[in-house]
Length: 496
Length: 96
View: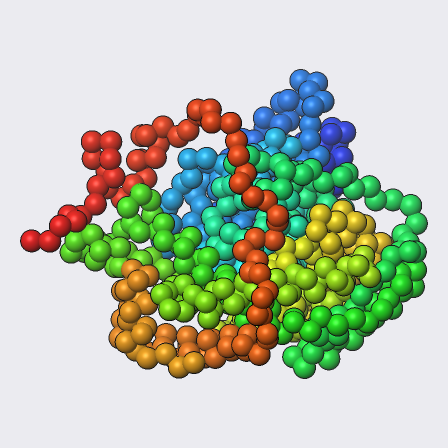
């Protein structure tokens, strides 16, 4: 089994570890050797914590051998974390020069929960700088490549987390999603990605981008693994005042997949002019399969969808400009070497520490919040947000979930949209409205268009996350798309 | 909505960002395009619509006012760019 351990699901690894069939050390070594094999091509990680992971694995093995049976659902499961999630003693730099070398003195709540459940942290993954970007290319350190085509972007901003799972470097990973940053890279790399309802998962210890939109969520190969991680990380936390204080009901999968009695809405605005033919064809096939499972499918309309993007590109930068004010060279992170007074120190530190996309968002946000423009931009955007939310709420009076593409396009070539920020922003049109409304959504693989993965997005009601996962599970049970794997074997080399 | 270079300079000052001449020029063009797109919002009638600042209806989340363990001062200062006598050290604040 040694050669395939890294390919196994989190559920399977947990079972094999608990049954004593595989040691945590064997699992960790297998994953580390896979990482060593494919990282030169993929570049999913900023930091691989080999020693930390092996040390942790040895402790888990010792506990199990000593007869300990109090293990959580992720015991023995390696996991990668997006690098904006604070890990005590492990560098966390958000793919920014601003935080290069910074080692958090505490764990994010989600990390505490993962550790308590027996998960093994394997490393920190590459991302768009401070989670601002849709391609991974705004990382200050290196690009991450799409395992399905190394000349293409993996999507973003949770680029490394999605690519690491797609490349079978880890079975599961955590990302964060502010406007689609879990779902979009999951779709473009052919894996499952979930954005929970706003407030289900604590944001404590997660470097803030846009606080009213940010949510941590899991990425994995199948819905069961994603649900397993979601159940570990979700729940009450007093240290995040926006946490809903709710524990999700336990998800159980099993029996014959059926969607009898489930009402699904297909909002036509998500199939607009920008959608590629191949993507549209896959989504239409998926909708037919959902119908075959017994779901009642009906077209609907969400006319404010086209304004959601505009509102988002005011709200997210406005919140970012406030959140990123803390990076001023005083308490942590980069400080310029040549300051002439305090204000000069701030301005030079920030000019040197931030990359172009982060500067752009800080500028938009500062402009939108500046004196004289607040009502025209920020307040207006928050009013549009209300309309988006109300429209979803009306749709959910008729439907249990909505079905859309996750992205209108498949993965584009590296560099293709880098000089055109607006066209990059438009790629997030299907995911952004969900964050504005705080809804849960999951992207599941639904096939390929010209050899590139396509993602199907399911959007649910507030706190109906587990119901949404049940629908995704039923779809996955009658399709094989999530079982496809990219071929990363070196040219002329032997296939693993 | 076209921005001018001097507006960009003003916003950069507010944001404490020192920009090169090249950055100012590209920022002026890119921000203008983005704001032009954002202006689509004006097609919507939002009169009387309350703004949504947070989707969860939570308000005034309170906790008992009890001391909790916090990070030690040395831990916090350990990663400061400059620290002295238990404090963060910054360049001089007053002119002259």
